[in-house]
Image (tube, rainbow, N blue to C red; front, side):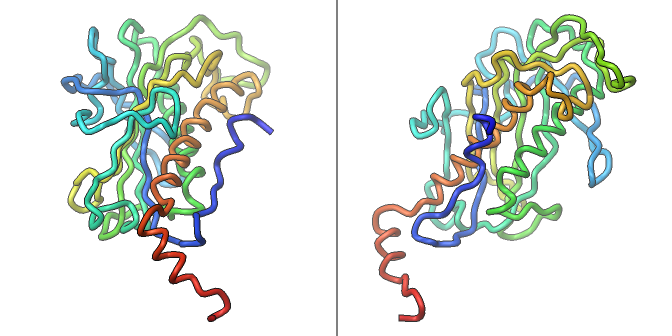
Length: 270
């Protein structure tokens, strides 16, 4: 079993089936939002959607994808360089929500990369795979929906630091799916936030600079079907798994809440 695929599924503590909220990881911080550079597309069951492709600002510590990074604090439970935030108000906590909308993923290209060499179909494929990994990581505990409403969250996410490598030798049968230049994910981080789908209020957020993609490259639009790019798939799956870990941690009852849950638990009606 791939080392990145072992943490996708979790069981809630005390058997409590609370409504679950997502949270995030990334490579972010406080910085002015960069200007949009281009738009790509991602194809899926819901049709073709736009993918925002932007340049990582030069000389900035963070990407600017999130509007506010000041609330984030180091999260030792996730390890690495993860920083997270969860709204402290219990009336607005993740446990109040029962479904989530997963938005198309934004892509931030590395500052020194020549963005003109990154074709739309390549950025769309990378963003599409990560979105698929996020959905697979949470859908068994938190239904994914398309329509905003009360008790529904919206997950915004970005892949930050995508770079370009050298020429790629296409394999037999790849045809039009082959890319001329490799997409390098070695220094990629992820940024995400969960907001109320109706009000837009932030409920949770996270950034993570932890390097998960050593050796990870993409050389084909259909990279998910090729063992050559297994490290790239593993990196995206691990980011999604870390999201699920954060989600599970935030829904584990502790203190007074755990005591109440134990007292209320009466198996077989006793």
